[in-house]
Length: 159
Image 1: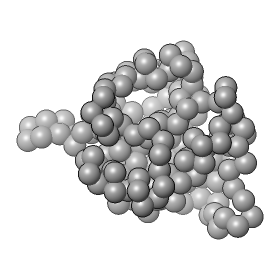
Image 2: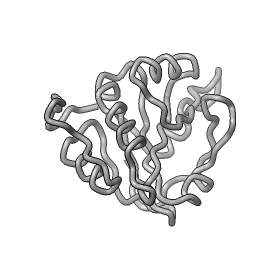
Image 3: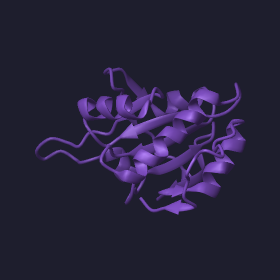
Image 4: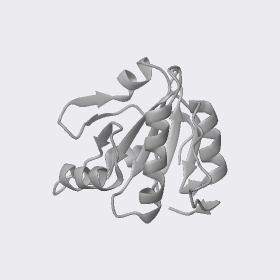
């Protein structure tokens, strides 16, 4: 995973509109969450990221997920896990095309991979897999109590 300046990108949303990193951070810090629908750790993590998205304070970063799957599989995932946060698609590439160009630019080797990108485009936090302590830190930054006593949450689950 990278550190320092976040690589610029422009990706399609689930509904076809294109969004760039520059546009995202113009509205303030953003938490990018790279995921794959078949990943069990992503299935654990994304509903908690939805809690951040739903409960965040007005001045908190926004959450944007980046799926490594096609739109149909991603929509099905979102319905199954109750995900309403914005999702962009990192294309798998066609024959001869680059597979997952944005994931590659961020040097992702495992998902989920999270990057908190500040307004100046610098990465201030990166997390691979599910790390309860790091997720709790994000909860504080977002103004959200992320875990309840009813949640069965591991301390760490690799991606």
